[in-house]
Image: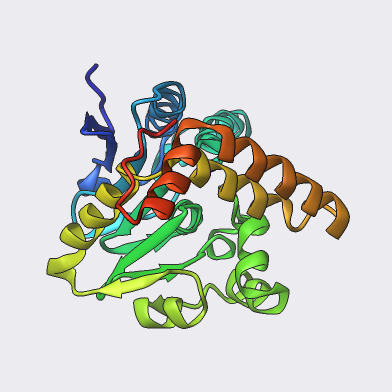
Length: 262
């Protein structure tokens, strides 16, 4: 299928998603939001997808919402933004709920909704030249795309509030020190490092990865006892699954496991 705002392909267990509006700072309009929703559904439904890599064309990762596009809608801007965020938020939710780990390769500035999208990945790799800013209040807006949920959990409420109110721009190294990204790499090494990571995930125990994502997400919602009950149910079911049996057998037999993603 041909897409207007993104590039999408699947190869050897990895789904590659590239924001492809470089002349518009890869800003999110309705088409982009719908296409991200569409490919997220595709990745969720395809058991052959065992890792996802998301990056962007051009100098910027994503400049956030397409304000020119929104402005052109006139009095219909509220309905348009509801439509855009519905698709965008569904995409973010699907990427977070699927078993396949999602790697974000941030090749340039991530602003507004681009910031939110960037931090929603399971692993976030940033080029040395990347910059991060929330930027919403500069346009008289409030954050979307998950940042009010995730950012306080990652960096604490006070730091999250400061970044949202001031729109301070963080360098890649500052984002790393804030625990917003996992690793900073040289610009010309980003693609290679990201590829190595998704390749490793694509040959790993996909079900176990999904369980980790779900358990971590529950940490802030459940009591200690409920969380441990969920841990018991998860590890016991995984141990009986093919990848769990293979992993345990390989450990006992002192060999490298061959995971099938089931």
